[in-house]
Picture 1 (cartoon, rainbow, N blue to C red):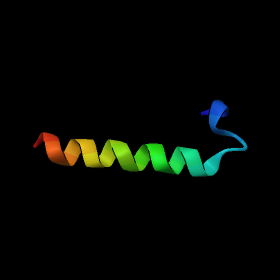
Picture 2: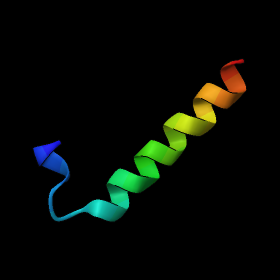
Picture 3: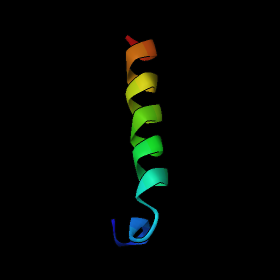
Length: 26
């Protein structure tokens, strides 16, 4: 994820949204 360099907060937020999405998908 070279694109995420310099923007760790956005990367973390994105991962969090993915986790929430997977939770709701079950």
